[in-house]
Length: 302
Image (cartoon, helix red, strand yellow):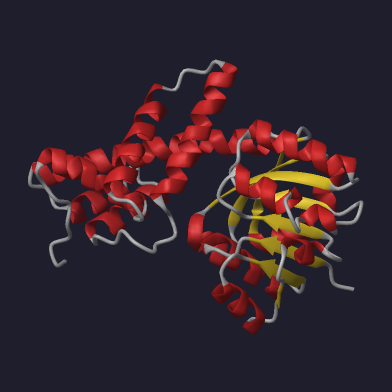
């Protein structure tokens, strides 16, 4: 009998995850504040739930793919929350980036009801969510991880589904480290592109040359392409989410006493971008630097 898997949060990431769970043969129940993604889920063969409690009713595992810890807490033990109907032995998988201590706080509440938690940061953005190739950074008891490996493999690249620690919060810590590198990479990319534009170097040249060099990461190539095409909306990577994630990274850095000079600068740049380009995606942050330099990074044929 196929497992029943729930997912709360059918946004850019969550909807792709739901489709991949369906493709893997699971019974999938989903909830979202909006009706449109629930209707699409039903069309794809899933079940739309009216409440979070309904998602959890009869579910073996439930993904929580929301924006922040306040939403995660509300989904799990707020009114009509998952805990109203989750059975002992079932598992909540938090794939939202909410911070280490918040994950531990939620685990304590779940444990009182005999419900397991997997704390799992994810990486890969919209393309990987759609393709089922997310990088999974899961923490929690190994036996719980192993029992849910089939579920995790449905949304993640089997070669990139990692058990990063027995202790809840380790997944959030690994994601914080990764987010630091993401933020600094964004900052360096935007600065390089603006420097090139101000010096008369076409972004196509930088994409080709730097993209084939030691710094030519997939993130550099993706960011450069979106910037030069001036594609700043509906790409699945919102400024506000990255700004929030960088804030959580710095929170952890303060907690453990780790200096993060470059990450702090990247966080400030994203805060400026969030205020200058509200509602836009990560790549729009480049406009803050463009304005200061009096230039625009734009493809020749744009």
